[in-house]
Length: 134
Image 1 (cartoon, rainbow, N blue to C red):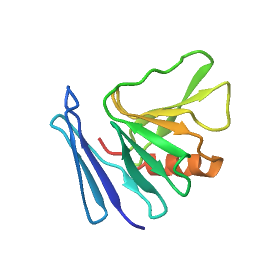
Image 2: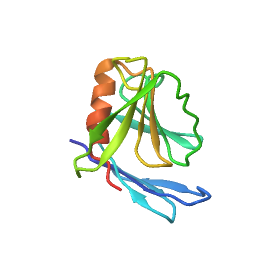
Image 3: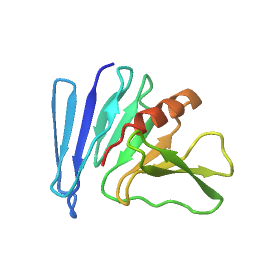
Image 4: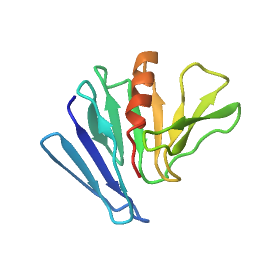
């Protein structure tokens, strides 16, 4: 398994820098360090102030937002818990009892949004998210 570690240190202002070395991607800020291990068959791409995790189709991705700049429509929204590998709980949001998740709240500022992932890709992302450390 290719190991890509995404280290995120969040600023209050979210003034950040990104650099990569070998199979590691570092997202630097000053407040907090977060990491996610990404498997071989996934790619990560910076798009404006977000990151897209995708397999084959760049139009089907999980969008990682780091700065708390998102809006969630709470109508017809339910949450389930997901237990991470470090035994912490995060929330997974579903609309109208949909089979696939819409978003995952990792912290008060970090969210992962499902953008047209296939069911298998959405399940794979859940496994990746379980490696999240904060």
